[in-house]
Length: 277
Image (cartoon, rainbow, N blue to C red; front, side):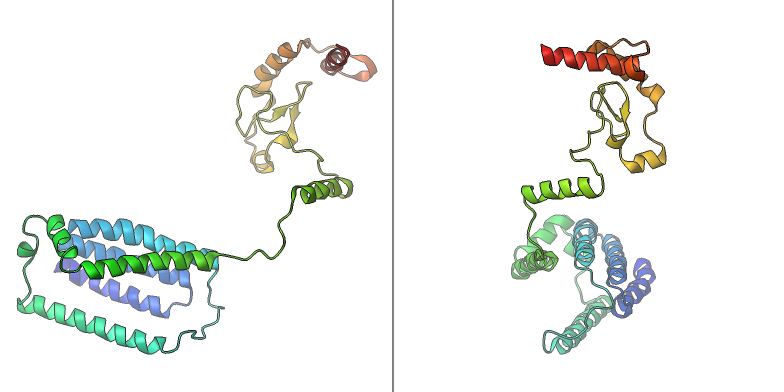
C-alpha cells in the first residue's frame, strides 16, 4: 500500500499532463512516467512477469515506437486539431467514465476484502497462473489486444510513408551533375579517395597516401580535421616509408629535375617505365 499511495499521485499528475501539454513528445514522456510507475506497482503486488513485460514491451518498445512516429511524422502544436472522426470525443468520454468505474469497483473490492487474495491468485507460481487465466478465460481479449497492436504498427508505417515529390535521379543524371559541379564549382570530378588507401589499415582518421607518399587531405572528413583527430605525419612515417620501398622509391630525399623532389621524380620515372613495359 505504501508504493500505491506514493506512486498514485505521480501517475495521476502525469496522466493529466498527457491531456494538457501542448507538445506530443512531452505527452509521450509523461506516458512513460505512468508506465514505469505501473510497473513498480506490479512488482509490489508480487507480479514479476507483468513487471518485466511492462518495462520491456510497453515502455521499451511500444512507447519508443510512439516517439519514432512522432519524430518521423513531425507532429507539433501547429498541426490542425479539427476532428476527422465524428463523435470521437463522446466515445472518449464514455470510455473514460467506464474505465473510472472499473477502477472504483476494483479498489472497493480490494478495500472490502471481497476480491481474491494474491496468495490464491499466485497459487502454483505467478507466471503459470497468469498464463492459465490469459489463455483460457481471457483468450479473446488477449487476441483482440494483439490485433490492436499490429494495427497500430501498420498505422505507424502508413503515417511515416512519404510520396516522392521529384523523380528519382538516374546514374546519368548524377554523372551530369558531377560534371556541372566540376565546371562551376571546381569540385572533384572523380570520387574522393577513401581513408586508409595505400595504408596498413583502413581507419577513418588515416589520410589516403598518394603515389608520391604524401597524404591526400581530401580523403579525411572535414569534421575529423577540424577536431584535430587526423593522424599526424610522424605517425604515418612508417606507412609512407613502407609504401616507398614497395614502389622502389629511394627513401632519402634528393633533388629532382624541374625542382621536383626525388620521390616525385622517381615516381614519374617508375610510371614511365611501367608504361613502356
